[in-house]
Image (cartoon, rainbow, N blue to C red; front, top):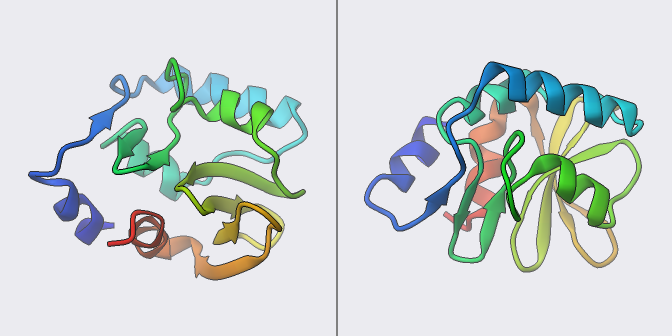
Length: 133
């Protein structure tokens, strides 16, 4: 993840409001009540740096962020396969966390084909992929 955070330095992007502990708890509960699992801890750790990002047509969703970066709204509104939490997207792909397989995935937005898989500790690689770094 360190490389991705370095990539953001000096780039033009919009970040969500600073993360509040209570916001993560609320998001976790709402997503769980929607039939999903909890946001993975590696992604929560990322949200402490940037609670949602929008840059160059790519998005990472944050906890209780108003507008198009809100993780709850995006998981309610966007079509998604079963057993995943939508964490971000670009024009062609979604970044998801498959909580059954315990891995991050890049999936095609049209047919949900899994294009790339990353272990939970490889979040930085998944972030690089969704932002085409």
